[in-house]
Length: 101
Image (cartoon, rainbow, N blue to C red; front, side):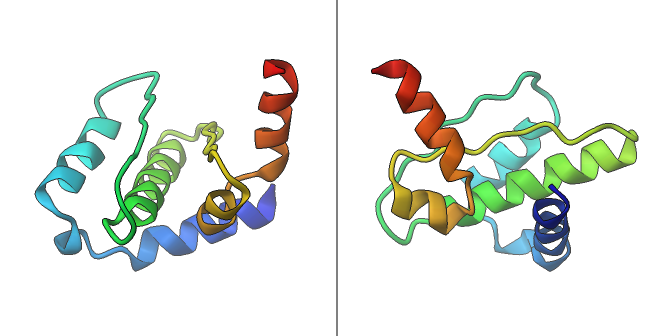
């Protein structure tokens, strides 16, 4: 929706790419070269998982805007806490589990 797009745009403008680790920078660059892109981001607490996902979402938003395309990406999370941290759609998580079961 409109609210989600606005928040992603804010994330895009507030990211300082110099703060990315080498691995995070490589993943951000990969976003531009592979379609469809499927990434699983794993790591312990405080390693920058949410930050990296926000960077990726921001870059996808920029690419879509540059090419006048509809932004079409989905972030899913294994738990409600992770979904809230990432601002991922909880209804998507529920929808996926409904069909898995």
